[in-house]
Each structure stands twice: as structure tokens, then as C-alpha cells.
View 1: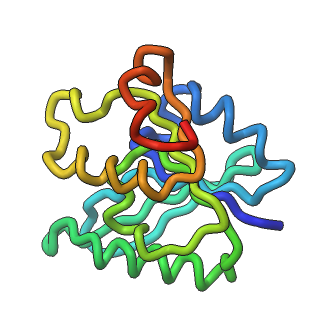
View 2: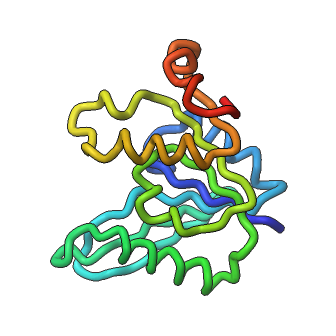
Amino acid sequence: MISLLCFSHLGWNFVYQRPQHLLSRFTSKYKLYYFEEPKPAEREAVLTEEKDGVVIVTLFYAENKGFDAGNIASLLDNFLAERNIDSYGIWYYTPMAVEYTSHLVPQFTVYDSMDELSKFRFAPPQLKELEEELFRIADVVFTGGHSLYEAKKHRNRGL
């Protein structure tokens, strides 16, 4: 069974909304891994929880080292290798994940742009650049509404 790796800025258990509505329906065809945003901890670790056919994954980086995309990429690579995950698609809800997933070679890439994240308070400065990269590599892009579609339709042929 092919795997679907989803990278999101929203916790799976935070509130039941668009990611859960869509992705939970894919569990009959894909082994679904839902990666929440990496978080600081005392030491590096990977925590998983399985819920209704969805494997919820949190990558923890050592707080004393700070966030480092290379270290997160290594944690991710180890996770995939330990589970023999070598055939997969990627579904993005956050462009920030491109920092530590750009080296992966998925069979397909989906970007679901639910909101204009760059306009959120405290949006990271590199978010726009990472979103441009995501528009470049995505096979298909969805938007959270018509106005967002109109604002972004020129940025990807699959929108």
C-alpha cells in the first residue's frame, strides 16, 4: 500500500476541520502519516499515535540545539527508513515543511492552501519563499476558497 505523508501546521486533534475531513477518507487507499509541526523538547525524539487509521507523527528537536531543518530532515529520514516507507505521496498544508522535506522524492505532491498564511501574525519571513517552491513542485494545488484561488491561480499550472 502506498503511503501518504501529510505535513501540517495544525494538530490532528486540535479541531476537526478540512484536513481531517479530506484525509480520513484516504485511509482505505493509503497508509496515512500526519506530521504535525516539529516541536522543541529535551532531546530529539519521534512520537506517534494511531487514531482511526491515521498515524499522527510529531518530530521533536533538541531544544538546546534549536530548530535546524537538517536535523529535522534526518529525523524524518530515519522514521521513513525504520518503517520501510519508500513509495509515497506528499500532501502539504504548510509551506514551512519544505525546509526539511525538499530532498524527498514523492510519487506526487499536493498543496492544499487553506489560508493566506503569510498574512498571519508572526508568519515566518521565509514562508513566502517556501510557498513559491511548493507552487513550483506541486502536481496539484487546492485553495480554501474562491478569493484565495483568484489570488494564487497564476502560481501553479495545477491550481
